[in-house]
Image (cartoon, rainbow, N blue to C red; front, side):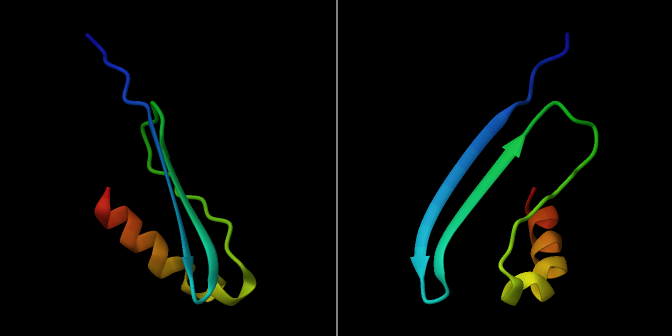
Length: 57
C-alpha cells in the first residue's frame, strides 16, 4: 500500500539582515528539488544553503 508523504512547515525570524521567512514543502515526488528566492546580497551563498538543506532532509 502506498502512503502519502506530504508536509509543509514555515518559520519567520527577524535578524540583522532583515525579516527572514523559511518555508519547506514536501510532496509526493521522487526527486529532491530545492528552490529559493534570495535577495541579491545572499545569492552567492545559495549553493551552500542548498547543500545544507539537502544534507538535513
